[in-house]
Image (cartoon, rainbow, N blue to C red; front, side, top):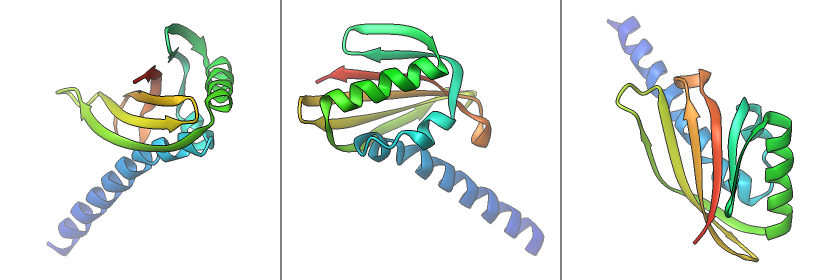
Length: 127
């Protein structure tokens, strides 16, 4: 029984830590510290900045997001909402990014489960 209880606690704490890690991405984006975020980027992904929506490889996505953040000078970021598909194979996070050039709604799309997820899309839409 003790073993079962420890397994359950471990699963809960790992799951909570993973969710917290993803949620911290909005603060990382606001601080222009996207290194943790980019380690989970898919090799091919969608990046949307304002009206520009493109599929690009990981290196292009990193450069595009870094350039965008340098241009708008982020001030703060926070997660507003999250959800997942019924199968839990895909998830999304919605946040708000405040910057010197206005506010943006940020969408982060993830595929995979638990620690094996990949970020397949990052979208910045002006509010």
